Image 1 (cartoon, rainbow, N blue to C red):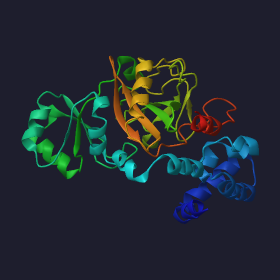
Image 2 (tube, rainbow, N blue to C red; image 1 turned 45 degrees about the vertical axis):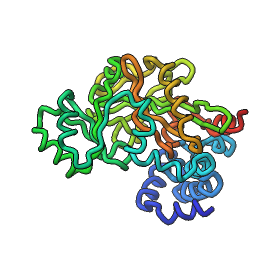
Image 3 (tube, rainbow, N blue to C red; image 1 turned 180 degrees about the horizontal axis):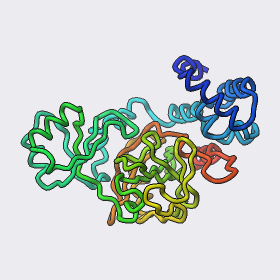
Image 4 (cartoon, rainbow, N blue to C red; image 1 turned 180 degrees about the vertical axis):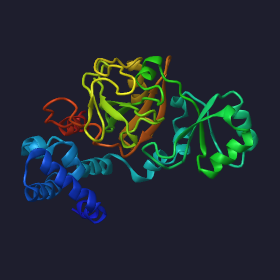
Length: 331
């Protein structure tokens, strides 16, 4: 209840009422009925209005609604499986890179009054990937062509933009690049460590769009499910506006039927990484698939629940909550 009240206090009411109108119009339902049903679902299922909209709650039965990991349920699982003190390793990108250096498979540098070290670092790099230390969802990340700058100018630019984490480019597999070459098209793998076993809850293929260098939904990207057993994409991709794509709108590459390269290596990396920090058992790993090995990009201690359950396939009316509970109770 405390969580729901805090969400009500922070809610974007303009966007909330816009969604009420949109849902009402799309489904030919009275706005008042939609309004009160959203409120009901907030208290009953812990669903925010974006959960309600994206998971198509307006057309689901009570039993179907119970199968979805909503914002409230996701928050509860995080509180249960993730120790707040240990989650700090994941919120600072430098701390994360140090802890998981074995799985990064690329060089990196933290800028801290160390121009000479930076100058040496970029000598062998055509491009570098630069990130702020704490922002999420691809915010503040930029790719720089080293030859476009004099070393001191580039260094000062990064300091001014607070892009203090500099990384060697993770070069993705040519098959991954074909779908959208401008972005590193990553796999989000969700692992659950219940203290006795580590299992993969779901895997999502995230694909960039509009020539953006990031693949996040919030930045205009799209996503689809990956079959955890086979590594194959079985359904079209969807963006945050619920547009569905069987082929990529920029490259015309087929999405359905795409097979993730070196899939077993991707799973192995995530399972191993999930055992590194005791007390953080619910993590979303972002992985770049390379030609010979996967690169761990980052771990998300508060993994997004919506991207895992978007209604990609026709008549999708079941969420991942039953599977999540099964894994949590697995011996």
